[in-house]
Length: 164
Image (cartoon, helix red, strand yellow):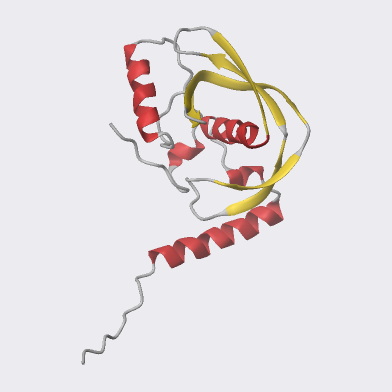
């Protein structure tokens, strides 16, 4: 079963996902489905799956419990296609949650992995990149996103073919 990638404007992106209260067969199947679609957004449960270096992982009810440092990086989002914005986030994080067996897990991550964790946890809490921006940056980013959306929706120019 695949899930739809939610894009900016979909109210699901502004909704905090529900905590998982019972790890049962339904949750295990949902995790399998999430790995199948990996980047799908829209399931309203506090489940985070990722696959880095061919190591699929899942954390249920994840939270960042510690962070340190600062790192500025051009961040993008499948829910806001085509837009990349320079954003500052903590460089290192400690994420805590539970695995499919109900065990507490803690994962330390820095740079790209740390940014991934923070970005995806924002999604689970109904927070988008736009919410992390200063007002002037947000205004500029929204205008750029509108331009990108309009150009993607515009029909392809007609071409005249010359047959000889």
